[in-house]
Length: 196
Image (cartoon, rainbow, N blue to C red; front, side, top):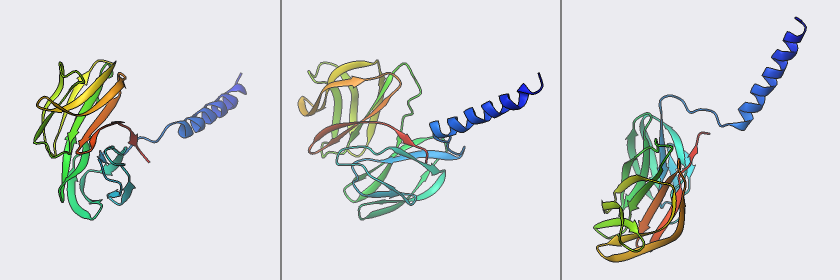
């Protein structure tokens, strides 16, 4: 009976070893999560990050406190708090740090609209313009809303003028999405996190 104990311990050890390769390690407790938007070349605290035109990068783990950001030729020192999510954007030559809403409700999809266009204020609505989703997002800022899981056509509007439309957007519960409006249109990126 006691001879089975070492075999059981060996099997548990093998299972634990397999789990370590299956999942990314948890980030340190003092971590913040930071990404860049619409920045083909960027570094966050010395980590290279890429976000194609109109897209959002994955969130990367940054220790709380001050860190350096380089977006193209612009450099800035920013400060983050542990447990929070942030997006770094540029408006003109200025680097801005936006605090993102965390996707805490697993029964909803989280939509965040980033207004990186020249339009002073924009709204995210259904493509027919009838249903407002996120309203009054100023240039260089963001707005968020948790919605039901659904497949829907979405558009960004300045007043009644559609600035960009996304057809057949499948919003899944528990996921977060970045919708980025630039002067060339509206794009969608599903949010993700890199812990390594």
